[in-house]
Length: 522
Image (cartoon, rainbow, N blue to C red; front, side):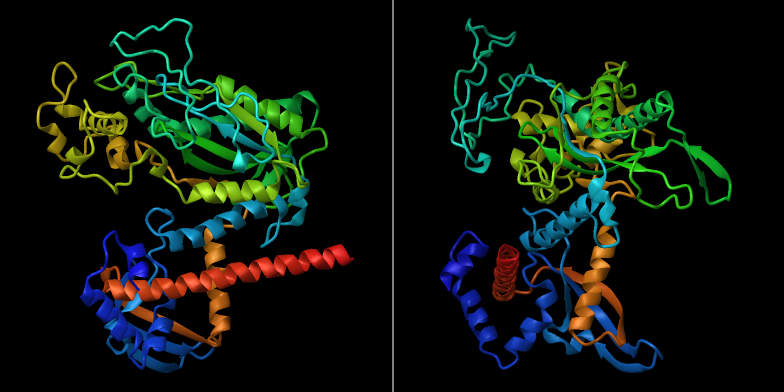
């Protein structure tokens, strides 16, 4: 019992918690309680709701039953928090990752309302990185000799080897001859904190979404110009107002995931798929014209990355603003469906994994920061993360409170945001995300299915599984709190949920094995 408790919290549980869990597990209605908590079982911090539940016939609306939550176990209704971050709630993140996998995979192979013909559309997997804001410790393997990158044991090159042992203007070494391990805490840390441009990186994180938007527009413009040069006629579509519009014969649909690097800068992994235009149905997914290939998509991406930059608005600390552009490392790979390194299944699993992550790789785990909590994390003379958070908070300050020199007056950090327009105000709101305020998984409307559709499908399946398809339940509920009532309840519910997940995992493996055997026999 103590082993299970140790999984839930650092110290050995107090005796009263173990006794409470034992009493709960030995009560006659224990299994009824487990069934009641199944919808939130495994959730780290479920939402507790109170109110009235009304069950009625789906076709006639006749009320069959009314029940107040006071009649339920624990006098409350539990609902999973739905947090996508694995560091906050592993169980909800596991569900989110499964949905993310389906969203990405359906855009590559079809299914769930997406036509299977999308598998024949040209598609690439592109990685867009941030530029350098200063030298950081890194791990680079110039040549892989391993057979499996997931178990790579190749020897890395020296971090920052220099022929001469020079120092920077602040007296710090400008070279590092260490061959860092993959889990070395130095990775991503600047060689010199004072040389590193923390302000520029915070601004880049904040405006990277706008950079991506303009880059995609540039990709589509490049392809449209290519079609004109090759004599491919534009498409004619009818809009909502019944007016005929002339549109390019190709369009790009994307699914994109943001990944936080160890240095605290985001970079994007994007699937970009070429689609055509159907004059009769503007929402239809049709192949692009035969004269446009995956090579053209590759060239359009690389051209857009070289050309597009964003100039951030003027700021009291920097009147000319900052230049927001992509880094030099841009990787474009073509997706195949065979057994190669870049297949649709591997890419979908890769993006789904990073959709549940946030700033954990940098070592920062806080929730949204406020004037009361900012001093615990921001420090202009602190470590790398503390300086990044301080840059977000300082640049996002109310612009009218600056002094003549452009600096914030003393004690301003405890001030509140005002209504004065400030294009950098979002940096304060997202200081806990190091300035990045975008969603970690986004997609074009036509790329694939939506998360909402997947959730509705799952809810419909559960209603049919519970033989409640002929009835509907309407709840008039209000929020009463978050979290389990006791540690014992949390352990019992989470242990049962873990067993259910394991059974599902084993079942899926068995089904996949049986399918493989059937294919081999055929």
